[in-house]
Image 1 (cartoon, one colour):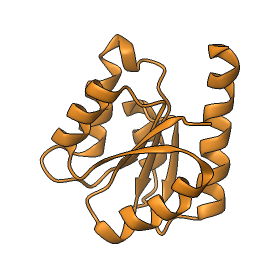
Image 2 (cartoon, rainbow, N blue to C red):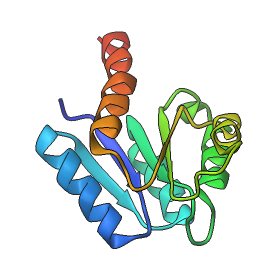
Image 3 (cartoon, rainbow, N blue to C red):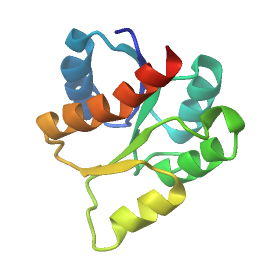
Image 4 (cartoon, helix red, strand yellow):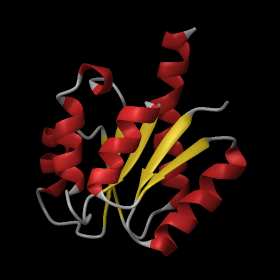
Length: 128
């Protein structure tokens, strides 16, 4: 497998949960704790997929997503938005900003793995 997954999460408990969920499945994990670090790590490492918390210090997950989508290298990188603030209309807002999927916190681990698998499998077929 070895796909690179960037986890952008400022809460250390949530970061640990995501690491414990994804690492045993063979993903190469990259981590960022705020929006600025997310941009730096993403542009340097070119992840195959990004799990993006929306409420972040410095730059919000939506701002980071919009900036990444302006770069040709990230025009097709799957981005999964994670947020504890699930309000009516949020899903549409996140999709408009460039996210491919949206999951609310607390994270349903089965759902996250399903969405992650769906988003990475077409890329695998396209890259070979």
